[in-house]
Image (cartoon, rainbow, N blue to C red; front, side, top):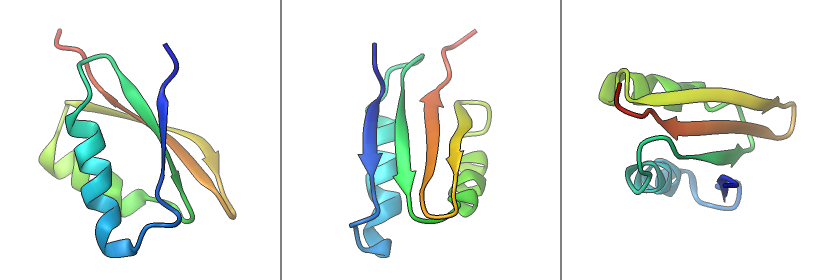
Length: 78
């Protein structure tokens, strides 16, 4: 199955995290999506780590300078 893509570059900054967490919340364990952003979403990683420790995966696919792509997944239960 191909991961869906969530491109937040055209969204207002105040709405981006809400969309990302809604998309993550809809995932079933083992699935993921590709986040496309216009800057390094490292602060978002820290928010995921604080709120979903051990429940998510984070893999950079592209690291700028103009576009960042990160695969965010919901980890399957052991």
